Image (cartoon, rainbow, N blue to C red; front, side, top):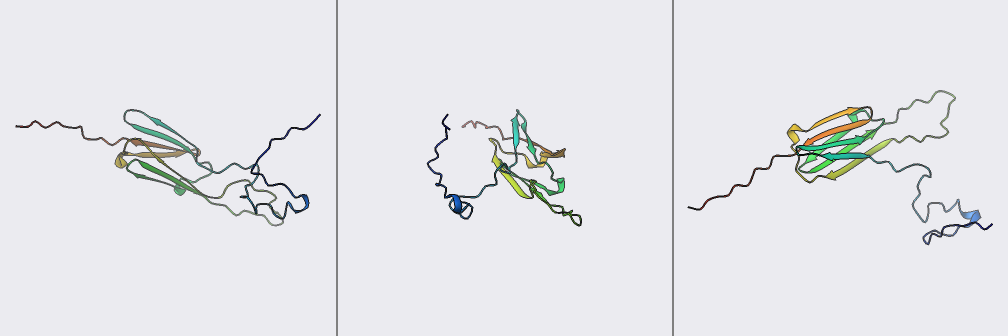
Amino acid sequence: MANISRYDPFQIPTLEPFDEIFKGFFRPVRLEGLPDVQIKMDVKEDDKGYTVHAELPGVKKEDIHVSIDGNQVSISAEVKQEKEVKEGEKVLRSERFYGKVARNFSLASEIDENTAQAKYNDGILELYLPKKNVAARRKLTIS
């Protein structure tokens, strides 16, 4: 039975003995099997404001920074590597992420920064972002 393979027009033909030498030279290197690191989140809206749930596993709350500018929200976090290598022990493979991640997004309405709230529990950052009260339009009567 014949093997069916998918054709990729952007794939560079392999040169068996030289494949390892040129690996990553022609195209960006990506670690196989590891997902891209990003902040996953859910955003919900009601009449009074927005509720955001962002996944930040393994991050200490002191290392999370949230900034609000009008309707722009920025979340950034830093995961630090703790050096705990025992004598005579070596790391064979480490798949945990260490470094900075950030996520910026815009909302439809401006946010009231003074009453915004943030909680962090079990790797989930919960933000409550109330909408800023926009002054109602007033029609002037001409006298």
